[in-house]
Image 1: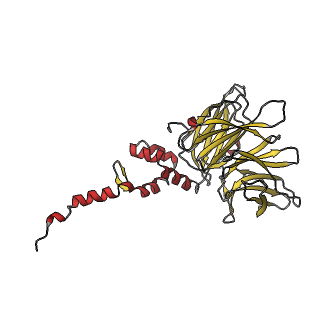
Image 2: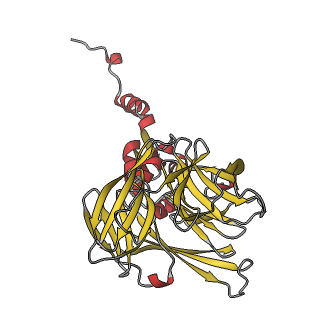
Image 3: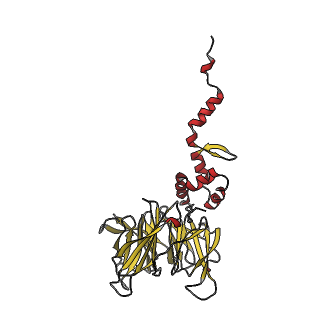
Length: 391
C-alpha cells in the first residue's frame, strides 16, 4: 500500500510546534536554553537576595525575571519567611559632638538563627538615630529631621523626602497587603499650646517602585491627647502603639491603614498576677500582649480576639502560659506578625527562640560583640527595591 507522504509531518515541524505550544511556560536563559518557568522560579527563589542581585547582570532576560516578575517576587518572599534573620545595628558618630548636625555611620549586621553572621554593611546618614522601626523585610531609621528606609538584604538605603518642619518623634511603619504598599505614619504636635491632639501624615510607596515614587498625605488629627511610646508593631495592616496617659493607665492606640481610622484598645486585665513587664507583639496574625511574672517564672501570652476592624468588638484571651524557670526575660525581639515563634532576650544575655506551634525552645548564640550593638530585630530576605530605578 502506498502512503501519502505529504500527510506525515516532518520531525523539524513537530519540534517547532512543540516549542511554540509551550513557549508561554518556558524561560530561555543564555548558555542554558529553555527551562520550564515554574522550575526556574522554584530554583532561584531559594537563593538569598545578595546572590540574586549578582545574577541580574547575566542577561536582560535574567534581569527582567529578578526585578519585574510578580510571581517570582511573591514566591521568594514566602520562602524567605521560613528562614528569618536577625538584624543588629551599631551607630558610629563622626566625633564632632553636635548631636543634630553630625553625620552618623550606621553598621547593620545580619545573622541567621544559629548566630552566624551572614552579611554586614555600613551607610552614612544625617544625624543621630532616635527611632528604628521594622516591618517584615524593611526598616526605617528616623533622625530628628530626616528619615531613611532600608532593605538590608540588598544593602539599599533611601532617604525619604520630608516636607514637614516638625521634628520626627512619633513614627510607625506598616504594610497594606490589599494595595501592596508600605506606609510610614508620622504623628506630630501642631503647636505647643492647644488641645494636645496630634496631626498625622502618611508616606506611601509600592513594593516595585522604590521610595522615590512615594508621597506624603495629611489624614487629619489623631483623636487622642496622650503621647505614644514604646515600639510600634503592624499586624494585618493595622499599626499599634502603646498609649500612655499616666503612670498607671495604659492602652493601645491603633491605626487601620486601609480605612485610615484611629481607635484604642485596653490592655488585658491582670489583677490576679503581677508582671515585671508587659509588651505587645504580632504573632500568628494576631496582636498579642506578653507578660512575665517573676514570682511564678512564667510568660503569659494574650491574643486579641474578635474583629479588629470593628469598634468595641475585641477581647483578650490567654492562649499560652510558658514556664521559663530559671531564666528571666528582659525584653522581646520584634518579629514578623505571621510568625509562630517568639524571641526573648534574657537577663542572662541569652536569646531564646520559643516555638508556639511545637512548644519547644532553642538558644541562639549572639554575635560576640553584641554588647556594643542596639536592640536587634527579626526580618526576612527580600528583593524589594528602595531606589526608584531598582539598582
